[in-house]
Length: 306
Image 1 (tube, rainbow, N blue to C red):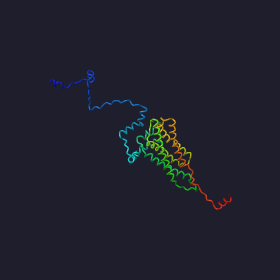
Image 2: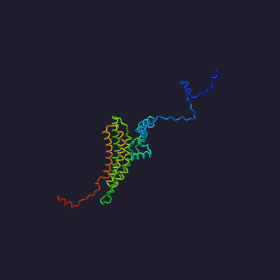
Image 3: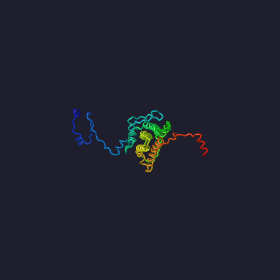
Image 4: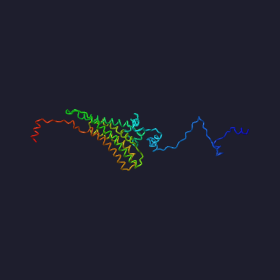
């Protein structure tokens, strides 16, 4: 019966007391299924830089999504590849438009609005709307200026649509392409904090042009002072979006190179706005000047005087 006595249950005291008596003993903690484990506080979170990275996003989050397989890209020759560039909802488009109209100092437009889901839907339709706004407003402005002149005959200038489309879409694609190539070249020489893809740069330029849509409509007002005030306001808003977005990508570079890059970006943007205003609204209309035909008597008199 000694073996039976060895199998009897025995109550033990506190685990801490038992461990103190026998330090080499092994203990197993069996929790009650009904109990919920107590929350153990994690390591204290940093402030400042870490909170900004969490708010704006960082490259590590993008790499994690890629490794997790959440972002899958199809071959470029398939329709699904280009369909992903237009996979954006109305709320995101309006939010990005609002961000381009109200730039926040110290906040990166790409990380705050674009990086989670860069799209071509917004930039494409913003450029298309701007093309027709400039062409139609330019024709309407020309009509209002010459309204009431007996010798004036209004003729719609449809060529302005094609010219405006060429200028706007060339700017929205070629300038980002050149800037992307330049940043890639400089990234090979200088370790930058921020890097942008070509799609993100196109997206930034496309949304930065939205301010010119209402500006082009207001350019109908036949007052040069009002037009130049409007173009300066639009240039200040959209130019600040571009400057604050691309400055983090070049600030670690050589000081002269960084400043020259930002100045070039702003000057090209200024050239677009001033050029559109000067060509489509302030250009002299020579085609509508009245032409006079010389009478036979005037021709004879001119021949005698010569």
